[in-house]
Length: 168
Image (cartoon, rainbow, N blue to C red; front, side, top):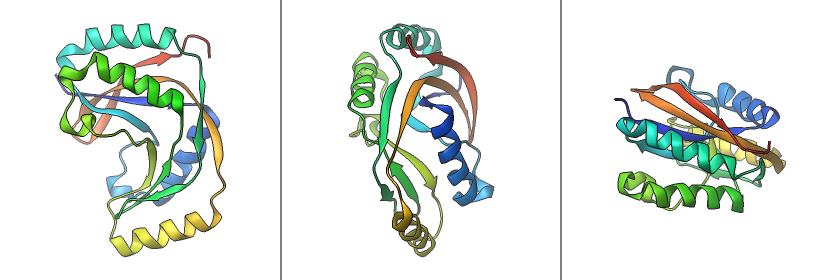
């Protein structure tokens, strides 16, 4: 079974805004994905039934909540929009506690939520775009409206299931 990835489902306006940036600036030959906020990079595919059950239960306890995009982060070889949200941190912590035995070293690291706009380019090119975008960046808000579970297919992702928060 392919490994699973868990992301936040953004409201339509936020998704459209960030996906347009990603489509414009991410190297097209490496851009297999739409804009996304990754919560977990590698969950065991053979545990999909339990993961889906956990996600149904957790999502029933949440309402859509606000995400704040205050600034950009330089990634060395790209740029990302930073995300601040106490609710997002709490949600991820809840799931991490349930799935601790499965978490990879990457998923055990401190969670720094973001949306990658550009990555995997030369450092000079990355710095130039970061400075350009940062000069005109306007902080914005958006909403998390649910979660998306994906199958990782060696570069491409396939949507396995969407979970909407109980009171969107």
